[in-house]
Length: 168
View 1 (cartoon, rainbow, N blue to C red):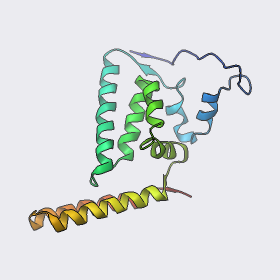
View 2 (view 1 turned 60 degrees about the vertical axis):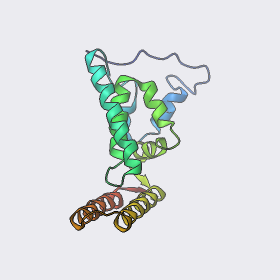
View 3 (view 1 turned 45 degrees about the horizontal axis):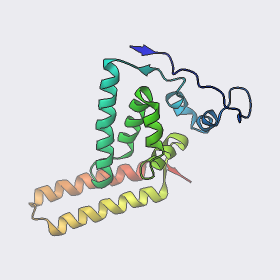
């Protein structure tokens, strides 16, 4: 069961004009391509069984995103975007908590607001991939075919990272 929108919030006394609250102003700064999926009033909220499925998917993608921070083979940003997609439809409060996260929130905000990733984040990601793969190649007793596969997957990951649009 889907309802059209969240209940309308009361306007705060410190708003800058009719219909503008601090939260609304923050949404107006977001990249227009993402505005429809981030505006709590515009996104239908799911209930019932669908809500359980969406929350489960959000949890799964969040875990995969967190694993992607440590594992060079898994991408972080797409999983976090999927987490945000499902959370905004089930629990906008949890989505705001994700966006306020000191570790993961900034990457998500950059992607949603400007459609890109900071150059420093790209450099960190590529550095981590290179360090982990190098350590694995040097110190692990894996057979050569596994090491070759690992290098190919890491190369694809680095290619994806470098091809992401970056913020200037």
